[in-house]
Length: 291
Image: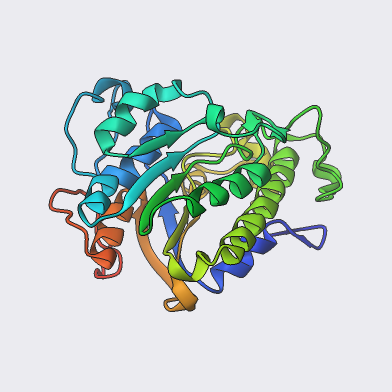
């Protein structure tokens, strides 16, 4: 996507050419938002229909990606520079089998954007912490900067991306915000390469939930189709999220057009890395012809 001749996500676009990209990945979250996406990706079960899995089922026993990784000798950690108790994460992360949960208390809050620590600083610090971990390891990073409402009164993103007539609209704010988050992804890749981790890791990028609110349907319709409003089918089609897997030395790259979701990540990674994954509702996307 370009706006006024400028790429909105140049780093993700570059990464896509070196990765396996799922063109029809849709979010599958319910009331739990980001926490539902974490649950889908790490457990391959659907979230709760009512309430949130992280509150309702934190006392349960799960088969999960971090537990499966630990069975193979991996150290596991989840990193999210936000309030530690949000979404009832401490007991749920324990149930999911993470060895460590690093939250805002474990990071230097030296660069703030929106809800908390800016992705740029978060990724730099996260890679430093990875370098201190025993290999092999599984780390699960949850970023903050691209969250609604997409703006910070103390940070002007107009110098990053000129959105022209969209300036001051939710859609314009979103595009500038995603451009800012994309800049941070470039930093993450650079830091992983400098730490000699990039070509020794499978790195997964995925979007967790909806971005543009339904009441801004008209702005999205204007950007995508030059029309006043998206019909129901067009709106549903617009609910895609990023999902791509990068392999060491760009070993597997290309495009996959299956209809997939976050629920497919655990079985896909488990089979790829030789982990146990007996109970799951998702599919191994590297070994299926149907979504």
